[in-house]
Length: 442
Image 1 (tube, rainbow, N blue to C red):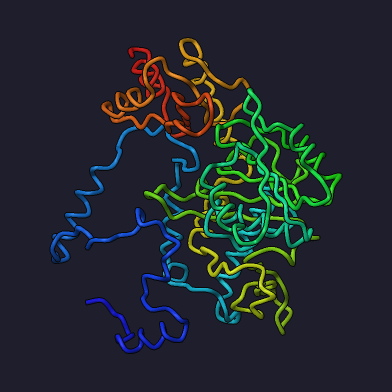
Image 2 (spheres, helix red, strand yellow; image 1 turned 90 degrees about the vertical axis):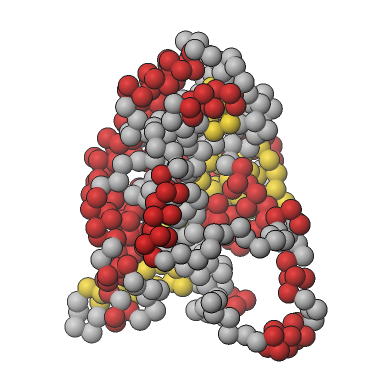
């Protein structure tokens, strides 16, 4: 039985207070096609043993073979120690650390997470995390608008399409103009368009690297360009492992670095959970969303931790808040902290090198028989065009229990029969060779 504390009379009084006749009116902005208009088709109630078997059977129907899909979600090896630490009661059941005197362990873990993320991204300060890369990128645009008091954002067409949708949703009612910078034929953002669009009214220039098509962007050139203006350079990403091999955002002139942390110790779980990473420089620290954990001294001069900045509406007056982000995804941040501590600087570099080398091997093999639309450097994913219909190619791979990649139909002109393919350290050479063998046979 569901626990709903409000009676029908309670609901009627609340609706009357806000001037609404029915609860459905609160969802008027949602298209009818996205609403559930019939009861959910669920099986009858089960006992615990039956439910466990049912869930196991459902899980067994998922993909079990090698996965060559990327596009914002990546399969990487996760050391077992990550899960072991994550499930310790003091972490697993911990909530927001409002009381530092009883939350020192949680606060220290968050502090270490911030330190590692700041170092990984080459930035001066990182917050205690966000929901995911899409919301983090949208929050970065809002932060740049606050910091510059401008209302224009130049966004690269190489940005993940879901992130672009999220930016448009966040800025829809804020009069922030979105100007798109197209991609060149080589897959890079058109820097000339960025330069011609950049003016005194620009708040942010948003570029993803590696971009959605796997291409490593010319971020240093863009950083130098934006650095001569009032605008903030927002360097976003979905594959943070790339920074074990390529220059991090801070070295490319980024004012804000934000993106996805899922690759760092978090498994793929059919849409979640994810972890938004967010870092900036000290000049803009008070405009950052979320909160920041800091190190201090207690009354006995011992090392201690506390929430240093909490610029959200639960802590300060609503109109002074920089964001309504109400969680720090602490458990996911802890997973990333343990993963990075285990891997270390050298380990991250080795994994990044493996990703790059294996992807280059597949890319080289496919280039012998198929077209590659872009000749720019890529990290662990790239675009290629099969001779047969792309959908049929992916279906043939699926028959062999291989998840072959992401169909790019409708993403951009000229990519209607293209596949975005990713290779991580979990893919063996034999599996890559099998992939090539199957697609060559079509």
